[in-house]
Image (cartoon, rainbow, N blue to C red; front, top):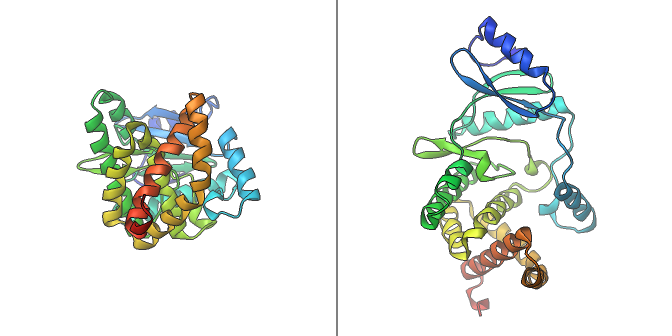
Length: 272
């Protein structure tokens, strides 16, 4: 067991080892003597349908933003996540503390309430939800301005760090397979997919605060990316008219809103 911070008490080590033997959970919360930690196993992930489709599309279509992060061994995935955490922390962003590593397992400090949990609590207040997600977009823009990308900026992978938003679950490394600016553009598009259920105005507000701090190169790559997706919008919108498909709705709403926004930024003469 490699300990990165502090010294674990004997009872804490025993509790972690007992938790490590329980293979039913990929991620589990463990209560130690004076704190809670999260034990996370790499190499036990299920291959989701969406991830499989992404790999198929990336093999067929010549679009860099479709490329999945490199497949690694469990131990290398631990090393990748540790490196991402350290890079974010070194740049001044809040992340979980690495308590220790054990083979394919990483033990991280508990960071408290996630943004996703707060959104559930305030789900009846659309304006409050919009404001919170705009805070997330602004912090993501600061991440991009620091020369970093997250890879999977989902509200459940963000938490409250005082007045700021922190990040966790660094399992992706898109910058390893595409230009950094493209990976950053994909970050904000992915976040927009989660904002889309609140409507185009929420996507617009999030884009505005992200754009105010994000690198110009990332904004330019976002323009190229959503214009590449433009031919697929009529199909998505037609599907949504005849079937209730949440993912299709998110794609159509977020991508169309971003398309209008980046067109206004870069090619205002093309606006209808």
